[in-house]
Structures are given as C-alpha cells and as structure tokens.
Length: 336
Image 1 (tube, rainbow, N blue to C red):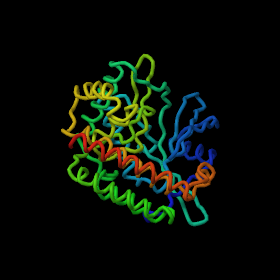
Image 2 (cartoon, one colour):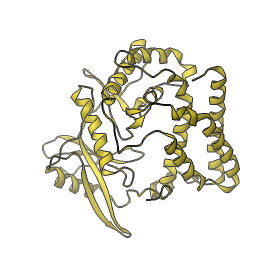
Image 3 (tube, helix red, strand yellow):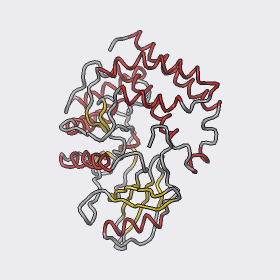
Image 4 (tube, rainbow, N blue to C red):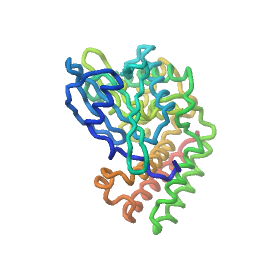
C-alpha cells in the first residue's frame, strides 16, 4: 500500500461476522448480544458468553499495522502485566495466540481483519485535581516507562525525521490547490524548528496515546492503563505532556507534581520538557495524515463532509501556523 492510499475500512465487517470469528478462534459460545463502543480508528464490540462473562473484542483497522506490529503491542501489555502494572492483557485463543484473523472476500479481492479479545474491565475516567492525583499519574507513567525501556519494538513506528517527512509528503498531495503555498510555508517553518530536535531525541517503547481518556479508575483497585494501540518507539515525554490540561507553560504546577511522581521510578533526559510544544505540532500533523487515510470510509464521509475542501485546509493550516508561532515564542524564552 502506498503512503498516500486510503486505509481500508470496515464496510465488509458486520457484528454477526464478528461473533462468528470470535467463537471459532477462541472456542467460545456467545449469547449473540453485541454492543458497539465508540472508536475513532478500530471497531470495538462488547460481547457476552452464554455463561454471562463480559468480553470486549477489538478489530484492528486493516492495513494500519502488520501482524508482527500488533503482537509487539501485546508484548508491551504482557511486560506491564508481569511487572504488576495495571493493564488488561488480551486473552489467548485456542491455538495460544493473542491475535486472530478474519479473512473476507470483497470486490477487489480479500481483506484481513486482525482482532484481539479482552476481558471487560470497567472503570470511570480519572480527573486529576489534587497534588496526590498528579503524582499518581506520574508514578504510573514512570512505572510503565521503566518496564518498557527494557526492550525495543522493531515493527512499531519510530518517532524520527523519516516519519515526520512521510506525513508531510502524504499531505502535500491532498492539500487544496489554493492553500498549497500556505501549507508549504508552514511546513518549511515546522521542519526548521523541529528536525534538529528530533535528530538528538532518544526514544524507547512508549504508550503513544496516553491522554487521560486512556486511564481509568477502578474503585478499590486504583488506576488502569488501557488502549495501547498507538504504542511506538518515541520520546518518553510524549506520554507525559498528553496528560496535561493545557500547554506546559500554563500548568507548571501540575507538570511539577507529574514529574515528581515520574521520578520515583525513572527519569527524563535533560531538556525533555522543552520538546513538548514541538511534539504537539507533530501530533497535529500526524492526526491530519491519519484522517486523510480514512477519506474513503463511508462513515468518515458522513462524519466529515467538509474534509478536503478549501475551508477545511484553510482552518487546518491556520492551526498549524499558530502552533509554529507558539513554538517559535517558546524557543525565544528558553533553549533545549
């Protein structure tokens, strides 16, 4: 698949096919009930066995990750579980694997849906307010990183110069012609400000999408880490700044407590906090590129009817420009 090709969607996958695939792969008998959970990238269904056990199946978007990359996600979860970090490991199928595959015939040939089954673990969102809350978040992230650093992920994305340039190359082919010059100007500024920092940035296995929506609180048990779908080789500070309620410069108190808890288990490289606004800019580019790959999905066209038009690109380029300006101002105030 070329980098600019739309990622295949889920039009061929139905709840009934999902049930059949889970029953066959995991040697289970389900009661036929299906509950669809909201998921921007994958398809996630709540299921129940005939004995009443609640389960959750995740069908990964085809073409996004290789089979080997998905197993590396499961390996990170398993490493965390072995270290008694609160996570939800996938269940083993009848053949011992944690990953199943459903192959379907479509008009253009065949399509493969890889999937994993998990025990259902409920919880409520964790809204950090007190000093103790922020230290708890920092401690949990520090524990995660101390374990994740012990080995690498060869098949996951690596946060480096090549990855960023790939996103930009994808978007160049899709940006509206009337906005192209503005886009190129923003891109030039982005690369000049960010690439020197990427080249010297150490990376390790990280969660990759550790916003507060992916941390649940289970009464009587504590915090629970979920959704390792975006795990990658990246800078550890990526998992910390996503937890903050605003820019680092506007929530220094919360960041301080977060780093105190983090420091109980591991430490950041000097200058890591100064990477935050650069990483925010790169996350914006990543999100734009990922949206572009979904442009031919039926649900996406209905949800984002203005995607690709002049107005859409004008707004997105302006948002990028504002973030470039913020990064430029930060570099005037401090140094990496």
